[in-house]
Image (cartoon, rainbow, N blue to C red; front, side):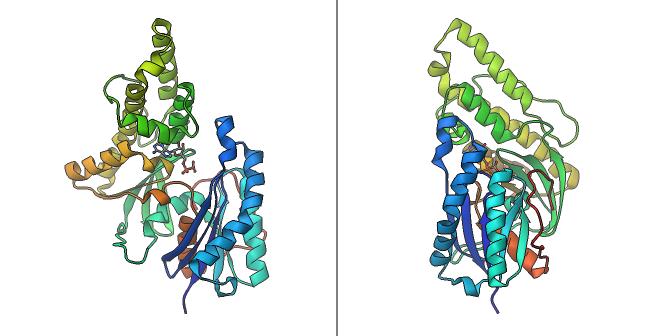
Amino acid sequence: MSIIILGIESSCDDTSAAVIKDGYLLSNVVAGQAVHEAYGGVVPELASRAHQQNIVPVVHEALKRAGVTKEELSAVAFTRGPGLMGSLLVGVSFAKGFARSLGIPMIDVNHLTGHVLAHFIKEENEENTQPDFPFLCLLVSGGNSQIIRVKAYNDMEIIGQTIDDAAGEAIDKCSKVMGLGYPGGPIIDKLARQGNPKAYTFSKPHIPGFDYSFSGLKTSFLYSLRDWMKEDPDFIEHHKVDLAASLEATVVEILMDKLRKAAKEYKIKEIAVAGGVSANNGLRNAFREHAGKYGWKIFIPKFSYTTDNAAMIAITGYFKYLDKNFCSIDAPAYSRTTLS
Ligand code: KG4
């Protein structure tokens, strides 16, 4: 009999529902929240309220697009954490109530595990190349920068992570300093394509092992701008594309330096990237260059699986379903955690 999983994601500012049947994606609906743009960042209380408005229509639409009735579902998988507590609570409560009313298992999914396992989502009429175990996954988002050694679907180890800001967070903050919109990542990416990545140099961290740090870069960017603007108050406007290109190049260099080191140390050549920042064109190009130079077999997600989506939650739920790894109705949401 087929295994059909409904996935629900509500950890930050995207309400999403997806249906996966026997590992194949049938639908993936994402409702974003434009309400935060005016504030230059996600406002937790507004996010929670928007999730409440979106969750029922989004789930309804995901089932409709999949051509699946709720009675055909095998289980409901949901993001239990990490994320914003008010946002998580909406998805967690809905998923539990929905599963309980249908008398089917509920499956809790760690958001970070979901990002990694997004590489295993299969689609009809697509090549569906997937990494072999063990592989390394660079997980880079607004809240995380980690290098993960993935030994199996259910066995992952963080071998390096940021000790302060995440890569996406640093890019977003620098973009805010430049007076650009929110989120800054896609804007910086677009500007960077027209600029010179070697125009400016910003400080890079010296952290041992495979850990990252991005707070120094943020400060260096801010102080450099302050100095340059003393000479030319319109410095940002005059040099926007070069600033974006140089900032992006520095972030990519920091990320790739440690990843290269980890790949060498662990003798792993299957290398994946995941999370919101994996949409970045500079990072994607660096992956392609490394594939050529170091013989890496690289896995870059489709754009639709880079930012938050429920397809990754549904595929993780599918693997946990195969392991009969279900959760109880009293499993609480968690705002912070590591992999599980
Ligand atoms: O994974 P994600 O959607 O949310 C979490 O943080 O969980 O990642 C969002 C982050 C933001 O910092 C956003 O600016 C960044 O991903 N981002 C990008 C690009 N698209 C999104 N950063 C650089 N280049 C992009 N094209």
